[in-house]
Length: 489
Figure 1: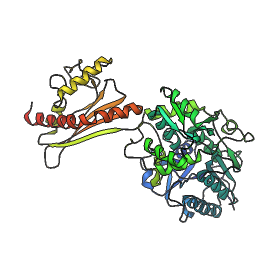
Figure 2: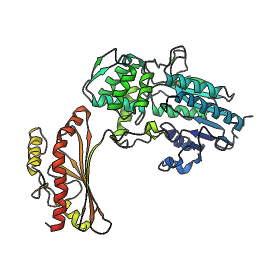
Figure 3: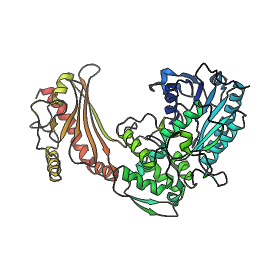
Figure 4: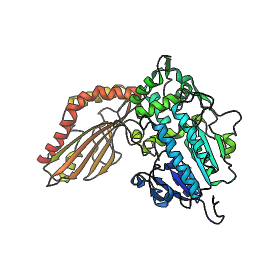
């Protein structure tokens, strides 16, 4: 027996998959609209950093276990769980989880289920991923509970697996050998539109049960998406060379190499690109469902890039509570792209104040301790291409915003931290940071970190070309600072 929400109270909503990409954006949106939100999390500790976590009730649990406590007194249950790529029988796992959830929701008297699935025509030979998405939707609807199934295709948003795959491929590769699937048509949709559709399906009683296909206003091939992305990102036009014999399985390996998307996940996503994922002509328009026009592809990309570059990505595909979604070691914590680092640490038998004084004496007449000739040569080369070179020298007083040779002071927190941002001409953004802390047993620990955010393939090639010089310059720089701290020079 279902129990509709009482008219004098906000609905109680259970969000599954709240540690995932869409769930982590949906929960705060529901809270903002007055809903009482409960989340089911296999690893509740992962929710602790979320700014909205204090506003929800967290129930620890798994879809394989008893879901009674999670679903008790719930009006609407949102199903956002995936097992994609988790072992060879992950599709069977998805079905088993959906069946357990459907039975428990029916027994608990849930009045509505909202599920986010995937586009694709049932008459086609669907990929394992899309076929499983459709199967889960049918299992949930078969529970007898009024079920809203929203079927979306490629989701464009900062941190989404589809967007990150597209972004890295286009950013890194000016020339791409592409397989046949780049000509498949798809209808991308912004993650903000997906979130708002789910919110309306949860809170608006006029949003009837059924299967709804949703997408943005643009129908594009993957190749067109690549070219459009390059234009929005301000990149030179990308050249695509089609090779029909390149299979989805082979493609997934170079996707896994170039992008932060792990190969097991990339394999499933690429396989799905053989299916056309376009909203049917007979479907209710997404604009009518949203009660406003959906964002265009270009608008979605521009928003995603802005959030990514600001380091403000609220959730990423790597947040999901499955091992396959873990980010790769060569990638950042979703602050805007691949990060390459050279980190070196030493202990100095001097106080943090003396070590920091030696750090802040760098540049100008003091120089950079090791490889001064290389630093000067780099400065000359920078001047030849219009950069500041080394001619700016050292200011009388070091402070935030002051130039220092071809660096600029970004952070100055005595006696703990100095961060410099490179203003030389580079195919990327470079930072040099020194952190000083008291060492256990006396003295200080000095950590020197060179960080480079490469721009495209040229940026990566640049880093690896100068890496041999780093092995000489950076240890010498660290040793020189330690020596000056001990001698008081």
